[in-house]
Image (cartoon, rainbow, N blue to C red; front, side, top):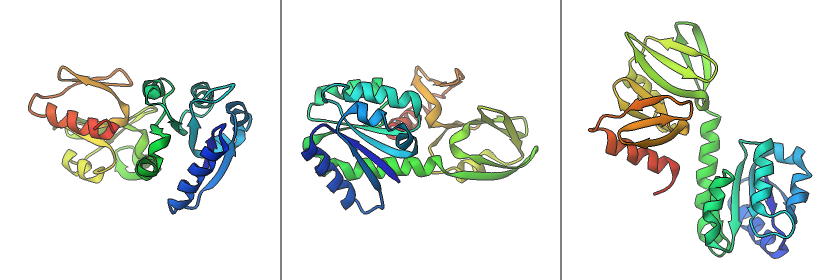
Length: 231
């Protein structure tokens, strides 16, 4: 995996590189001393899995750098690193994946890397089913939700739908640990596509609204909160 470190302080770059090299994976790491220098190497960014960005840099700061990178490479994982905790909320505005404090890197980097690598592995997962439409391989990340319709279960993706004569309980077991939540008998939802859950209604990024039964609401909220990493 290719990783970029962008920080205008050489000592901080060296410290982060040392922690990444000690993590135990075979990474290709490239360092940058400015946001403009990083954005000027967009070919490398497009191949990166993770980018570590210092927020407080002279010239183009980390937040503006993150905005430009996300505009070109929306799926890259950006980790904002800073000495100041009050910047945490700004990280959400630029769709950063994580926010780390420089003073805590030795304690927090491993967990951060564990979580991101798990998400990357999930993005690469593929399932194959014998649908009514024929045998199809689907990226798990492309499945928005599965809904029971009469005697079939329908897989909804951004491009098309696929129908299968297989029980929802079996599909739930197949996709266990891949980021799906079961509201009730008729819906299995990929939590990556949940925009919000409130007042017993789940709203997806597609605009789809799904009612959540009161009996299941606390558990669905708990699973979604854990998935988002806010607990």
